[in-house]
Length: 199
Image (cartoon, rainbow, N blue to C red; front, side, top):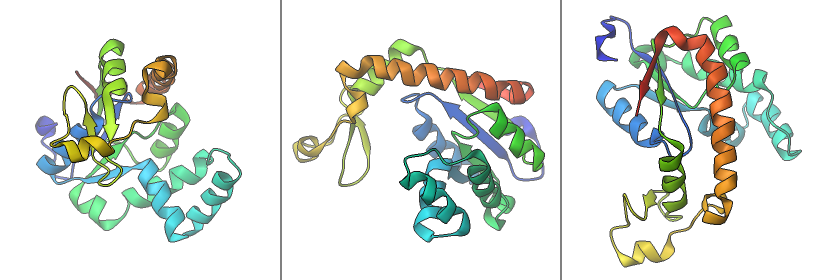
């Protein structure tokens, strides 16, 4: 990333399976390079909360239990990437695009990263991380029973586990990973010349 040697701000896309450490890496990258961190899911929720035009459209689909169409999400992402802070500081696009059609839509708008970072972690490690992952509902902080345990008993007592992170749902975890790999393979075809794999 540092070797890009470009005068203009750095543009990065990062992708990783659930529990690959994407959140940690995003934090480190944005701190080191001063990039604007943009996560499509957060962006979607913010647009809906702000009742923007795109947000209103998205909300209709979400309330009907439907997926928000690509065109709406691509427009949200595009508009966010073209805002002054993103243009001046550079950006880190987190977990998006998730399909070759989304990547192609960004390309059509002239939006292309300098580097595509793929966090490549073995399935066994990912399943172990997911099953041990816990959320503090008070602070939103993510813990892991083995790798990053809570600081005290009070925090430990209120930690919750996502329904799809349990041992019984290991099959669902593997399904999520399979879906992720299929999506990544499609996106990699667009960014193969700028992809960096990290473990």
